[in-house]
Image (cartoon, rainbow, N blue to C red; front, side):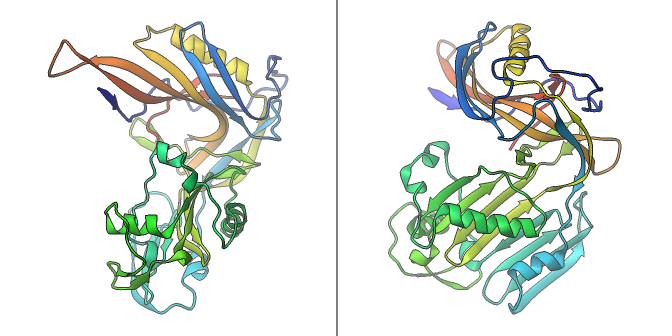
Length: 377
């Protein structure tokens, strides 16, 4: 029997040491020293770990001088977000109260318009808007589904690339820069209506009332793109993986958008960072060096099963500092590792079950030390 357990292992020790290197520090030359872009590595490491990894390194980076930043949470003014999505709408419900959100400006606001659209503002660090048609849709795509061709097509109103550029322009107006690469899935209206109704069957093109009492006409006008963006600085992605260190959760940016011929139908933004200052520029470890560090890690333990590295990503991650809501943004290498192991069946000890456990290993790119991964999305 094949099962999958979804969790992320906690490894390594996190310190508050600065990522800035001293003058004169250098990195070791290697065949992949200046590699940029996307490639694939397939090989076995001395530890027994198998590499079948897609490697992603942003184009235009300088391995010898990567910036390290001091950052804090971006607080978008409520008026700015409101004007984008609720301007000229008749508001039927409005709620304002102090927020329990630890980050942000302490303000919570919620609006519902006559047309069924709604907007949530929490401290300026969590922003949400949805039209009536998409308020009740639970969109969840399995990994296998994401590969299906029906989710990759362009709709007639405009291409996915054209829609992405318009969304990025809106995000820039809020002070949010995004990475060049993004995820996009094409969702036709019939598939969306099935998700709204909560049943998997063919549903004719007809009117349906959602929970707000607004009648939705399901037709091709509601064909939608689902975008998942990654925040960036200098075209270097900022991680979208949260981390938990002891009792402290280090936030990560999350941006999702549903887009149709009418524009943005739903948008969710949380925990974006703003650059306060560049602290320094420092050399970073290259792909070969950081794989060697991973090999050293697994050579130091007894492997209980099969370990396969599926993805390697160079990205920025926030480290906590001694100042409240202030972080140091440093370059890091993230490994996505699948751990396969056979575990004895709890009901029949003569049988075993194969478990696949997704794990992550994180290294500080400036010095190669391992960083605690905590929890991930």
